Amino acid sequence: MADALTPRHRWGSTELELAAMPASPPEGRETLIRIRDLHRRFGPRHILRGVSLDVYKGETLVILGGSGSGKTTLLRHLMAMLRPEEGRITVRGLGAGGGDLDMAQASEQQIESYRRNLGVVFQGAALLNSLTVLENVGLPLIEVDRLPVDQVRSRVVEALRRVYLPAEEILNLKPAALSGGMRKRVGIARAIIQKPRIILYDEPTTGLDPVTVNGVNELTLDLQQKIGVTSIVITHDIGAAFMIADRIALLYKGRIVACGSKDETRANEHPVLQQMLTGSTTGPLTEGYAK
Ligand SMILES: Nc1ncnc2c1ncn2[C@@H]1O[C@H](COP(=O)(O)OP(=O)(O)O)[C@@H](O)[C@H]1O
Ligand SMILES: [Mg+2]
Image (cartoon, rainbow, N blue to C red; front, side):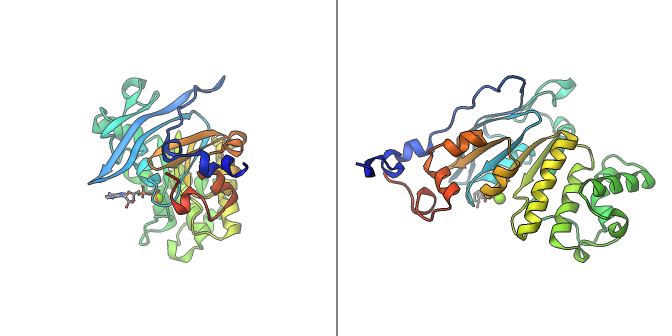
């Protein structure tokens, strides 16, 4: 009897992959980014299969997903490095003349101006090895904003202090002279240097030691509280998700199959979430699902 009630028996493949319908924002929240029925194919491989998700202004939304599930692909759409080939992404107020930006329709110029509101923390720190910390972090100010050298320097110092780095000591060092955790912080400083409204993080803690992981998570929270940006964090680390998220979404088989607050996520019986929560080696993530 108990056996008949286990998720494995109740959840067929269709239910496992069924997209969660985006809820309307709670009182006092507004939707900043709206993704509807987004698809992406690479040749014959159908990676995103109808992603629908709303990101609320000012929240930290964590998107969980297994390795190869399409997390970076989704992020590249949010960076407008990939345009929707099917489905829609709209960003409220960041289009021409303060209107909404439609990612499929927008001109290159509109995309450029959207990107100036965006900070990206890449998987790995993605710093340029031949440049100093000052040059790495200041690059957008030099190349895009064309600010004079002394202003670049003071803005870089400010950004480095925000991520708790000893700015004066490391300004002229190359990335190779820094620890992994420090490089990650420098990467975050670069992401915030243009005072973005949206920060995208791609697996910010992957490959770091546990103490550094906590430091980076705390930093994400701290930036959220101090500069009030909207953050989208992509990760496979459910511990990090519960530490920093306002809401948690799960990307599975090309769709968002669950999305809610931490309490809603804990209570969600979706077998993939449950497997992630318990760290079990048996479940749909590791053995395929019951047909
Ligand atoms: N430009 C591309 N060309 C072909 N296949 C790609 C490309 N980008 C990603 N993929 C494939 O799409 C799948 C999802 O990749 P990705 O979004 O990087 O996953 P994740 O970030 O969740 O690990 C992978 O199987 C990957 O090989
Ligand atoms: Mg990835």
